Image 1: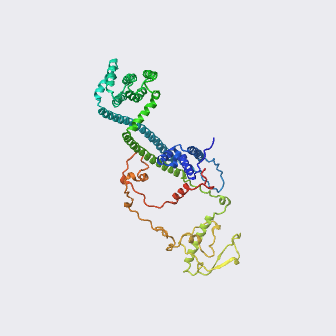
Image 2: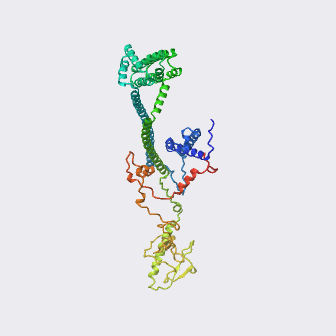
Image 3: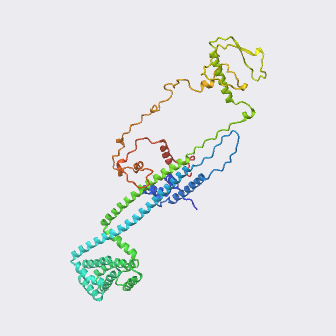
Length: 568
């Protein structure tokens, strides 16, 4: 299959490609909404079967295939992971949607399907309303044309001196019974009064009007029989004025009767046509040709009459157009509102799908190597060391007032195996003076332990770093100016303008405002139609366009490049 060629105009190609992407992702409702908004725009003629309609269809089908493939890739579950137990390894469960999230997503999908079904139903209702309006318009036009024809006929009869009531009294017996006597009397009256061209035209137009207004086929056929006798007399007597008037009226008479006739009734009309064709001096050849195409010929007659009374027909057409445009505007407003709700629901769905459930990480396993090897844990050693330092500090403070003699404090060398040490290994310590930088700790009774390895001496400088640096200094406050004041705008930026409620009140009528101003008034939980109060409509506060919006506009109108091709 040959691929349709894109337009040479870069802007037009960008419009087609971008619209095809949106239609592929949002459905044909977006295309219909674009048709309604861009009706009459020459750049969107491809939507109505223009020059690049095939290329647009090709792009839509291509984008739909790409979008469907992406959805399938997203819906494929990840491969099953086999958990391998390893020592000292933190494990985390794979991320899945919770049951609550699944229920919410299913509810959102149901709401979107309901809105799409409502859009489709609204389109069907609009189409049905259009058909009904066209039928009503046709009936109104036919009634208006008939009324105008009756007025013109009465005016023409008054001008030429023919009394229509007398003519109808002569014609009525022919329509009802169509006997030889009634036909003979009627023919004599018509030939007697059709003395001039104007009178002949008036009499024949009266016959045509009665045929068009008759409701049954026999009534129409009886008048046509009378016309046949008049044709025979005008051809035999060379009454050219009467013959010309009959030739103009016989086509709509015959076609109007033939359209609604049955097969048996059409046989009677065919006999008349054969009779007229056998008589070369009855009707012209082009008139006989029109009788063989009754539908086309009668449509042409109706078009001529509508053109004759164009003013009355245009008035009825304008009223129908206004009524349909009202229905159409209601449909478009509903479609826009429903599409906005579908987009909002889609954003909610994406937000829910992007939310990862909170799964706590497993605690690292506590090693039992120290328990198995007999080594004292580090935490126990630190706690015992702190308690020893506290007990020594307390004893030093209590001995300050007793002034005991100097004693020697044995310090056992680390790793020594002898419990009795030589004298040179003893250090002379003055217990009356506390060690330098010794922190005075609160009075906590020492914990007695039976393990000699826990009797570890204080550090050389007597500083408990864990107790000193675990908390900030008492009364510490950050200096003034260390952190910026976020309640004010940064330097160089003007302060946020104050918005008053009066500034947001629209001054134009509500039906001239953009439809988007009604969106904040429609709540998401509103599932049924609720009328809105125009007094609640507010203008949006003045705000500069966001960077995201500017970037989206630039991306939409940017030319394709190697980094940003359009076929992705």
